[in-house]
Length: 382
Image (cartoon, rainbow, N blue to C red):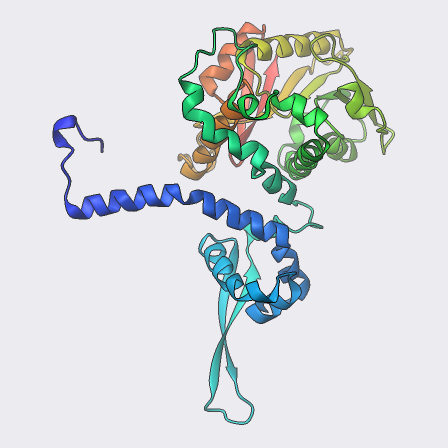
């Protein structure tokens, strides 16, 4: 409950609670960096490869930690356990010579969260963790206050971001010109697409029924399209991206191909266009959607099954199964929006904001399925 200016007085108990909230938020970056450290050291893989819960001494022995730093590992694990990245168990060890002697040994095991960090796992998100927590992305947030006080102009196409302020060039230019960050970004997007592709095929297979062709716009190395092509052999899938991205790529199945081009000029005709994200500013997003609309209208499909498929955030959605607001997912959505504000000129949209650009691009009907945690699947019809 908010307080008016005349009601700002608070009890000592309330002030201590408020202080704890501020301190907790101040220190959230430490939680993030602890997660990054675990990913860099490969702690999830060490525990997984051990085959059973692992003791602290066994964990330290497997990690490439300098002996002088070994005693710090328990403190790292303590906060990671508190954040539910790992589970902690206490095993009572009985001395063989004297049953009266007992020693409690701390053991660590994986949780569903840390299982997503297994490098050889089917849903490895480690590359995404390392990319999002890279200084190239985190440092611009220190400039947010100064950036907000600057005159940015009225044209979204020319508004520079905190990212550009810090790095001297837009996000996409740096990703193309700086190999280290470019590779980090590509690996992160491929990892995210692998997990999302499996979920799309398993949870929303009906979305692809009746389609003969599909173009994955901005599909990168084709991870998402590969999942669809494998699950639906009758759909001819094309990955459409910038020429330098797809130049050396070839389809692994008969129904998967790669085409280079510019989505602002022309998109290959198909029954369906897939957009994994649409984070451009509104005017640019409308241009992209109009080109997608042209592509599906030019496709040959007598059944009339033509649509745009967007997998993206719908801010503030209600979970269809529980009919209740998922605060954790909404917080993730809002953080993604702040990331977009810092790095590119786009944003994450509410349903009303999505509807506005759909209508501006000439679409008359859409359907939203909230089934991917903090992301949704949108079907858009001409």
